[in-house]
Image 1 (spheres, one colour):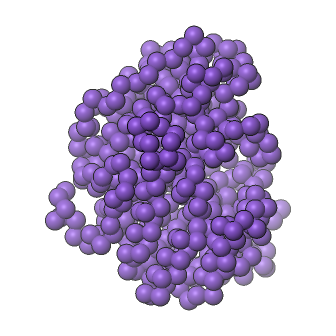
Image 2: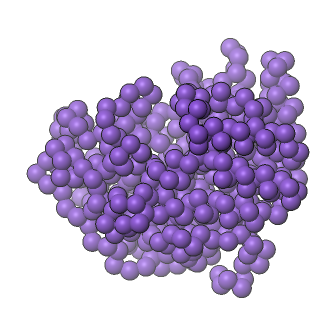
Image 3: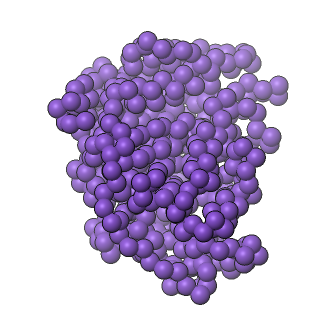
Length: 455
């Protein structure tokens, strides 16, 4: 597809500050909810012929993949036994993980080394830190640099709650992260080479690679060469890899990158009809300000967030940057055309919150982004993040239809984006009343008050 053929979605600009430009000729397939995404990811790993490389932020070592498969470590062991080049980049948090993070990370320490020793692990691992920030990318590369190459970019952590399907059946042990809604994205084509380049940068520059327990096996790991060429076209979608990377983390990117923030602000700033957001955190003052300006232009805005968000948000509410986000969100709640909603499901014992961990946005049936980036300043200017943005009316419309259809519990066929937003907002407000009356909900989305969210 050439730029002149893109027609109705030319008005959404791309990011210009990052290392990677938009590239044509890609196949982009959004994967909604972890049960769907991890089934596709595991199948790709099982059919891989040369390599499996993964960036891991959070890992529950006992979580099992869909389809009767084993754990993440089982999946990697199986690929290594077939002779594949298996490499895993784990986040190494500064200090000792505490609270909710304690069981969700796999740091480079004696305990992790013991786990790998006991398993007789035959693949390579390195640990990568970002100081007090998070190495938050969640990326899978299968058969990188070959004709069979496929990559997966998104925000889904490897945990039991993340294996939920679109129906969000009742969790065996309901708790905040027991039933998670999330999004990932399958990509083939030229833009996959940018994901390959990112992995090579991080693998070769992993901060802990020379430290005790900072790499596996203990007798040494080897660096990767850069991609040998650009992957061949695989579809008709224009796509771009955008990132957040702190300056100084990697020699090949000394000034860092902040193209995710630029892209969000550009897309919202160009919106004409609607903005649909799903995000674990909605506290970026810059993004919320841009949404307010969009509402001034008559743009509909619907945002889906977790009804029981991370307690740390309320705990750090006095931080100036976060306090400004709370103020901006409360102001949007007073605006016509804005709806904030959280998903839940009626159970025999009450309502189970469906935890929104997705980091996705759709604008005007023209542009969308899926990735690891939360809408808060720490994701834009601290954590290491990756999103894939794409411009393709059919693919974007399909994503919007699946997301809105799941949240609203109605058929969006034939609806324009604006009609779908209005219908979803109406369902969410009606569901709020149904929830007060202990009634069954339509879909999952329930309208909530922005002024008291995450307090």
